Length: 369
Image 1 (cartoon, rainbow, N blue to C red):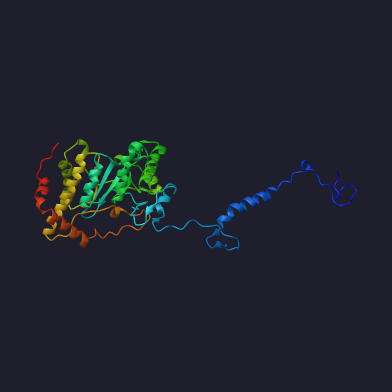
Image 2: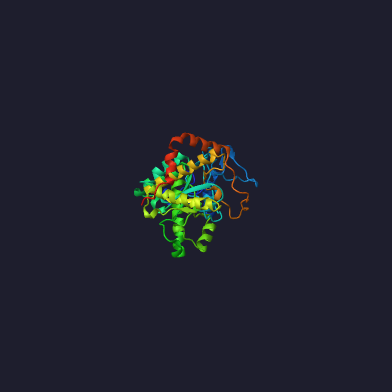
């Protein structure tokens, strides 16, 4: 049957084809399809809370990153200077972050009666928590040079990671002591670099910032390693005072060996301040740290009784730090103790007056093997 409209010979329009005879529409040109995709992707990003933002040339400007919240601060300069920013943990805005990048190599010497305690090779679950308790009780800062393999993100190293987090939370400086404690100058260049960078990443994954202090295992260093550490952003740190801990001496003997070296320099009229090296691997060394701290503080009681306010102080790393491209430190001698430091020393003497004879008795005891 034929339609009355548009039928053959009607002269009106073309015949209506059956559905099966219809042809697909022509394909969309590639350039048009690409423009549609780009418009869909860019469109939402170009719209802010108040509508599209205009760029200088009149087209919508892409949206910026989300606004920084008040609770967290952005990564510090050395975080991205020493590595990628990916994986950096957010930090509370008020958190203190040690920033000592690219300093001149530190040999451990310091003018004045100022000491910095440093501890190598940790953390040790059996001894380091007790050491942290001592430092908290005596209100003494320290630097911990940590071995990287002890804090990698594995089940059997979770205790070590918690200890290192506690170090940072209590205001101590967490520093790099290599990944596996090798004699670095004896390694090929690629391997000693990995010792530093692998430990660096392990430490940053725990404390949330990039460490900037490095102590070479055994204190062994050469020019190539030193130059590379500086380029990498590190400050290399050695020490002035150490004890023969590996002979497994009793704690009083370990403390006395350091006190003896300090007195020898004092008698010679040389600078007595500096960095003390101990290892928290040994219970005797942890106890020796407590003895040393209290003996030095007891010395302040004698000084103050004589009217001498040039007291001993346990300091952080800041007095040792000198930026490699910065102006040289002023050679004006050690700064005088502040009024707060003197009052703190007097308070300690009052609170520990009954114990002073026992603390001072260490000077008369014989070394115990």
